[in-house]
Image (cartoon, rainbow, N blue to C red; front, top):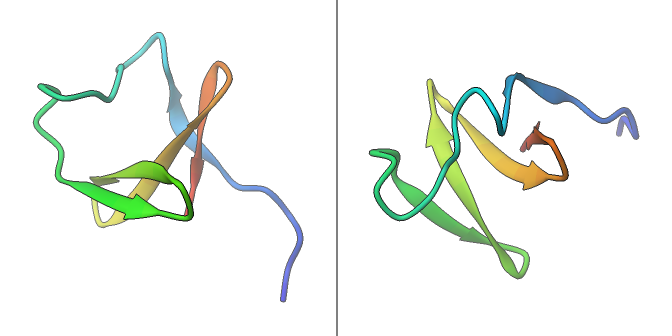
Length: 51
């Protein structure tokens, strides 16, 4: 298993996921991920981590 963090190709400034962003939400490990182009994004500071 890899411990490398993978960051999404866009930042929070580029697109802010939220209640009305148009992406499906998934509860994950105490937070909400957003389905985006076939993968899940989780906000992490000024960027998104891919899950």
